[in-house]
Length: 63
Image 1 (spheres, rainbow, N blue to C red):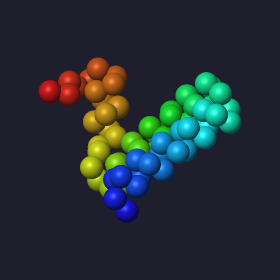
Image 2: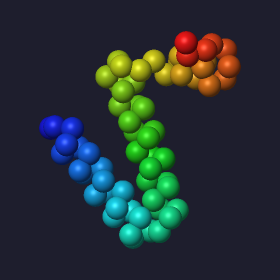
Image 3: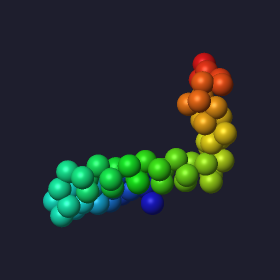
Image 4: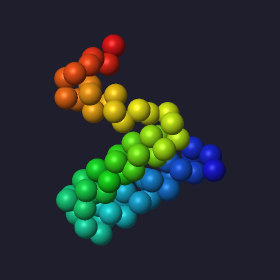
């Protein structure tokens, strides 16, 4: 599946959520999409969640 198709599907989903459920449905769907993207990258091995949590808690810097 190409990135264009994925981007189009995500745009359609977000548009549906904003039209169907208003602003809060739109914001919650964006939050869940971001969480899903992070978990997907972690499952692929492209993101280390422990490093992200350490950076957010101030234990390490990202540089």
